[in-house]
Image (tube, rainbow, N blue to C red; front, side, top):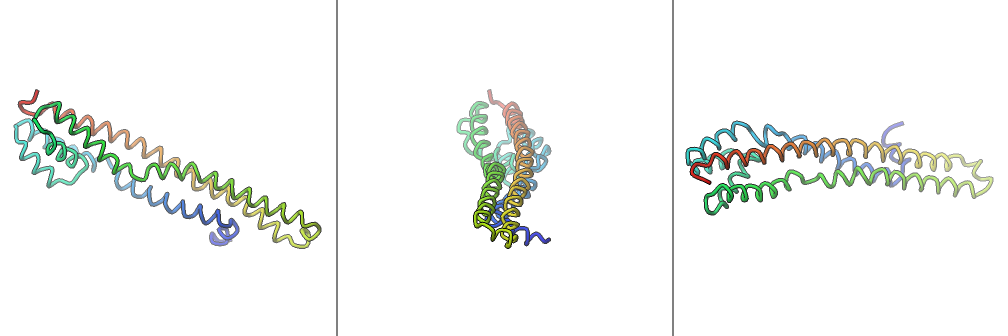
Length: 206
């Protein structure tokens, strides 16, 4: 039996779960590409920025951040532009505010992935209930149920398949959500550490 035939038997809930699975896969692929620590917080970029600011070359640090397109350099660039009076405290405040705003960009899609993981089993349950309603509808028709087993099998198939499809969508989504959340926590810790390191090496800042 083909996947398309299984989808047909699962009814509208099956197609809805298929739609959610496509969205889930798209988010997962995007996060696999985006959430790479070596690309977001390159150690070489951090080292060069620290070298620039420790020598008082803030202008060179700004130009470097403009040329190097990474998550870290974009935060540092915005922080340096909005630092105001060049003090360690001002830089850290600007860095923190910018980092929070930038994190919202790389976290985009995570709430939706969590929602899919939570909703999919419930949709599967709805499909199960709808399938059972079809079965009882056929049974209450009386003796015609025995003469028309296709209606019974259709209801049973919908009840079982939607449950399976709901779990097949939810389990990977939940697993990947937790995996990406751990990655985000690690990235946040690295970014925070980088901000403190840069601030501590600002020449002449107190």
